[in-house]
Length: 314
Image (tube, rainbow, N blue to C red; front, side, top):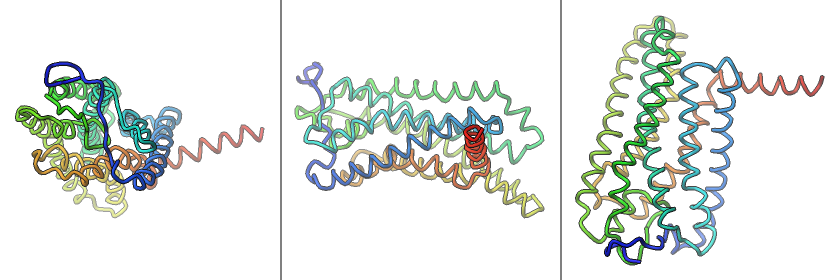
């Protein structure tokens, strides 16, 4: 059916690397492994933060929100991606594509806001430690979490409907792995200036704005760390912030490369690998970054398995 004539198409074709079946089989195995690690890692963080009382702090409350966002984001697109990578059928229904777009864009915007809130949490912890418990009160944390999810809903309701109303070309071939805004704009055969302007606005509000505030907060954090006399205190402050900084770097580098550039600058093949990176790799790395050097999470795991072992022995 023809979108240009204001009718709903039967579906889209997600091309991916359909011109290279061998590469798709390799990617299928890689994506399956990454998705499994993503599920295990993020679910583990959510369960530990809920079960272990030592992790009932604002930092781990927001880390739980990040894990939940990553789980939802990957699950919204990776299962369909695996189906398309495995066999010759690359189709996705119109409603499926729309749902993927709405969820994907909303969760991406929500994660931008969440990373900003996590930076604020680290700022209070390092710069105003004596007032941390008073400022980061559980009620405030809950309100900030609601703000995160509400911002995602607002973002996707503003941008997604106009994207799905574009006059798509008759072939409906989306040259990417997921139905995201840049890929659908490339599919349009009509005027997309309004949509490209919206990308710039969304990129400024949800990418550049939070990133600027995060950098400002870490400027204050760096100044506070330099005033700490003991080496142990500096190392503790650095460990407190290094994981968050690594996640911010990975997320914003990939997000900026996609949403902060005009349409003509997108590299087709490079853009596809970038899509794989921020939909598959980053959600896998986030729990690893927060757990590999985190003594609290390691301690929670030891207490959990130690308790299970003692129960089984009894």
